[in-house]
Length: 106
Image 1: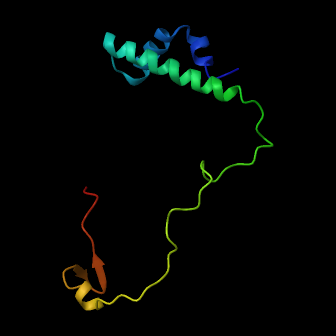
Image 2 (image 1 turned 135 degrees about the vertical axis):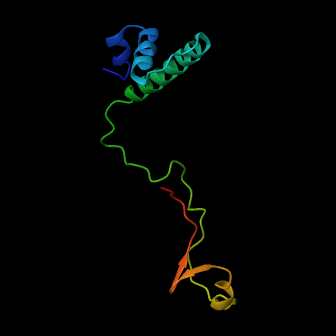
Image 3 (image 1 turned 180 degrees about the horizontal axis):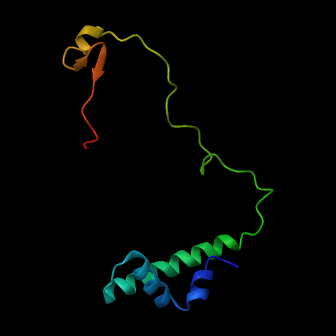
């Protein structure tokens, strides 16, 4: 069936763009329509290429696209040479807790 069923249901790419405008409650300029039309075609072509791959149930899933080892170092605990009192000397505290900056206002 492919991912281009939306285009088949709605007609051509322009119909899809008009449909997107109605859904998003926005209006595209002519230049935006041309750019969006090109991008939609690229997206649909990509999905159609994926559909051409067929049944992948026997393909082993990858954990990483490239066959490389993790570039991250092992997380080994180390003794810190700076005393805890010095590390905590400039932080805000609330009781025995370190108080961080507010990230959500409301």
